[in-house]
Length: 249
Image (tube, rainbow, N blue to C red; front, side, top):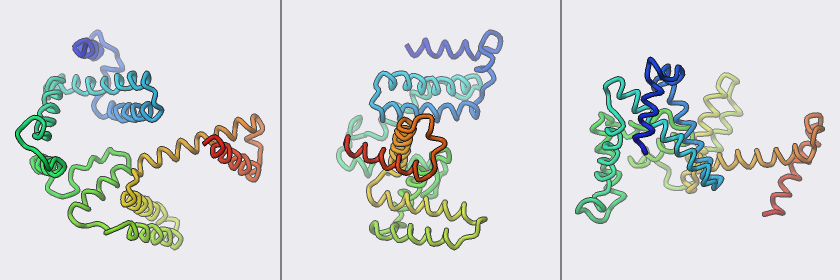
């Protein structure tokens, strides 16, 4: 089946008979679609929509095939090379399954990843954390990397105090400094969440979904009059939407 998909992509990319849009793309123009498709996979999982998940996984697979086809055209690598590389990596990282090693899997996994980063020339503890990651997720990964070197708070009290400190710095900052100080606050909140065992990226996605759900309930309750209501009236609708959720919960 994968051969059918690679054949379709080759035809789409054919300079003479292919699709003009597909032919015009390159790695940089396709990358945003790759990220978007990964999020749509996560969204389908969050909604527990398995039919949609099947479709979204197909869309994500297409992104891998698309990038691989462009690389093949450039003489860099092809899809079989991608599959071989990840297969080799999984076997290498799981010697307790595919080799003779046993025990200490977590430590072995981290040591192998460190060795792989070193082989790529990533010598620093923070090297290799992808810049294209969502900002909250990247902040957490940077903090975890730093923590492995011993640069970390011993408990959640430290990052909690840092959050309070950063809020005070925002209050004291000039308008030109607000963006930097807000960034520091967000970074501190991620650190606090990490110490509390909370996935900041997932927590914010959940908060987004909750806000969207409650806002739509407000609109449904008020109907066409919603936009013209004053803030007090909208706040009352918001409280009603929250109360309805609690009652249903």
